Length: 180
Image (cartoon, rainbow, N blue to C red):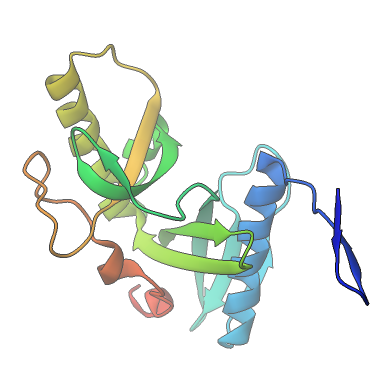
């Protein structure tokens, strides 16, 4: 399909696949790290356990990037309330390294904008463990390897999980490298 005006003809862009969305998020994070003066490199491969390595004050910091194009608006979850969410797995409950951070990315493809939420792995792991336990208790569903990391919002009530991390506390946390 083509849309146009008297001077230009624009082709409708194809919808990127999940791998392209993931790479887009990783490159956006890498670009921002360079923009704020940090040395960083992207790791490549399908079996990697970290996406970006950062050097700051002679320390190695690892970033795991999780990207979603579906978080344009917060979603209401019956158990956890209004939130953004990203899919992780059971193994992420055990990863609590002082030099590992998760960067959760929301992409708005149409507007070409990104939102970044940078959170220490210890907080992510503790939240995943508590949230999954609560999810199983409240829903009576069978256990799976899938986990959901969620960010809530100030002013919302989270009865089932008062420890809900808030998006406002972690958005654009580019000072993460000073926390080690």
